[in-house]
Length: 554
Image (cartoon, rainbow, N blue to C red):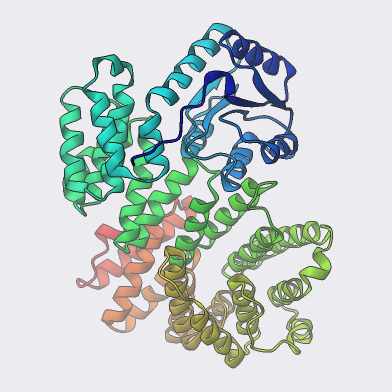
């Protein structure tokens, strides 16, 4: 790092103000002129802002949350970063009249340099602008090292500044930079010691979060537990801590725990598309069909008019709706089919979607016909479909596989699965999760020839005809496909109370019983369901001393 670019003189700094209110433009422009800034551009919407950024480079970008009907400031800032109009060298200031915790969490994720709350105060504008320009100038070498990802050099310059009494106002920022650089260099033990020393004199939230991160990255959950518990109680650290825990459990391949943490983090900051994608992947692995639907709905909702927006997201909402319907009662199926039909009509109205997505739409319609018990019409749609991969979209091919399975075309279904497994490569989280998911699918599609809905119907008939073992087998497979379904779990208990009257339950039956108990324990049951649940547990526990349900169900 022998050479550094020169510091841009104040008079040459370029500013872009993105806001749909001319009053805000005037306020900030006047404040900038007061401190000697003349190169100021203004944009009233996202389209105008993007054109300005394509035309020239800006050192400062001030961006409002509400800028236009087509794209909000969050999506615009994300897009500016994607196109490298905003880099680590750009000073970003976010403007908003809204200060909800959800919005603030989302903004923090994008890491602006400052956050101004409207209505703006002229004196405060000048004060903050002077401070931010001073930061750029005095920390010029440090910021350049961070931009170049030369973290060792960044630590060197930060520590030099920390010995300078004249830099005292920047010391908190410098200390924070040192800790982040140590973690970036994977010096986790050193980072832990560093944060612990900082806590002797300061109590900033970022120090506690940094300490938790450095301990967790050393794979020491026990050591981190006390720190984490405190951070989860604090409003200013809860979201970041949940993200840390989710990442820790992901790396440990504890997908159930990772899923619970990432669900909570997504509730606190729902706009992050990548997090919702992880949420969707984890919901698949844990067979939470309600969770899958919610995740794809969030993705479609928050990606609208952003760089992530595509018809594929709307398709996935319909697909997740149908996946959920395959495990529900007929009344619920009818309601979900209405919703899916409405969403499909909305999608087909999009320009060019009917032609571009014809194959995908045909397969979705075949699945909908299966759920409506119109298998003959569904077969007419699928008869010319070959068990070959359609393009590179995993979702398109998974949907085709499910359509074949729901029509009882087992060989076609397994052929698609085999090809999908060969297609998935890489060591990313997404590719790994997809591979694990496909392994589950392969086991279930080879062993189980029916959908959840069909298995439940078969179990009802077998129970009515007093064929308890077949009814049990049907429900056991149904619970394997839909482990989160409380009605299946309750029906299993009912059947097992009949089986235990004739013989002692096998170890396999006890394991299935405990799984059903765990499912029921994780849900809020209606008064009638809870009453039946308690009755079944009482019968089962009286009949067998070998069954332990206390930790799972009571």
